[in-house]
Structure formats: C-alpha cells, structure tokens
Image (cartoon, rainbow, N blue to C red; front, top):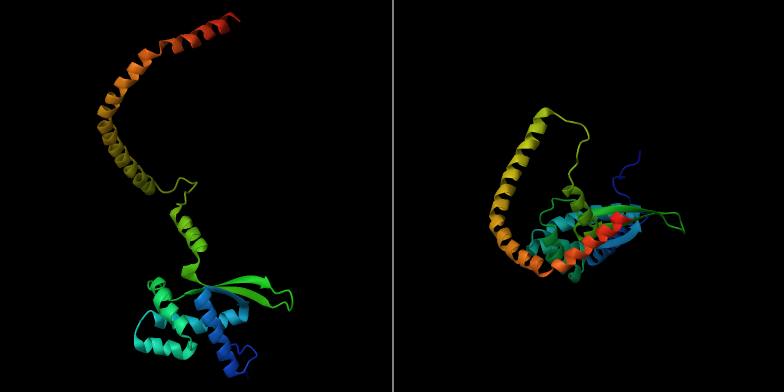
Length: 201
C-alpha cells in the first residue's frame, strides 16, 4: 500500500523540492510565464496559487507568511503590488498550464505555466469570442420570433426620428449643390454627345 502519494515528490528530498518550488514560484512571479516539465508545473500550481490568494489581503501578517515561503523581497513587492491588483476580482484559478509536447533530449512532457491575467493575446481572443452572437439556422420557437420583431420595430421608430431631424440639414445642403450644377452644364453635354455616337454605331 503506497501512502503519501497525494503530491509528486519530483524525485527529490523534502528540502530540495521546497527549494525547487520556491525558485519556480519566484520566476513565475517575475516573468509571468515559465516553461518547465508538466509534473513541475502541476506542483508549482498547487504551491503558488495559495500564495497569490494570500497576496490579495495586503497586511503585514500575509506579507510575512508569503515571505516565509519565497524568501525574496522583490518578488513579494511584485506579488503584493502588481499581481494582487490584477487578480483582485478572480476567485482562484490564477495560473494556466499549456502542454507543449515533449522535450527532445529526454522525451519529458514540457508545459508552459503562466499567470492568466497577463496573457493579453488569449484574453482579447476570449473577449472577441464572447461578443459574437450565435445564430440558429432553424426557425426556432414562435415566441422567440415575436421577441425579435419587437426590438426591430423600436429601432425603426428611433431611426425615423433621426431622419426627421436630419431633413432640414439636407435641405440646406441641397442649395449649394444646385449652384454647382448650374456652374458646370458643359460637362453634362459631353456624355450626351458620346451617347449619340454609340447610338449611330
């Protein structure tokens, strides 16, 4: 019976494993994304997410608690100053693990672990995806069809009001256009003579 298998020991002693996770966490906080093996990334997620949760409560006690894990003042400043503000509205799930395949030398599974709120490319793609509406090809229920007709009617009324407001402006703009038309009657005669030439041919 194998006890104590809830965590991956990563083939290291307790102190070596703690030092490894501490250094990986400092690198993740500093660079916002790191590339490591999949097993280390999964263990790092379990190590760093509670620290990020503690950083959301910026007190001396929470700073000292996180410092006891990381032992790095610069990463504590970054974590409590910059990262805590970005993740303030998020209730967990601060990291994302993306599998990258296997490493050439030893065929180890490699993964990219990153802080979710710092990936602008992925977050903008998600925003674009959520703004698109999905349209059904089928007729749908009749109650839904009636709901669609009502907003269109309201939109037509509002556009009619806009057109009525713009009508006096269009009349004012039409007067200069007639003056321009009177100034260039010769240009209109030329296409008429070309039309006669095409009729004869």
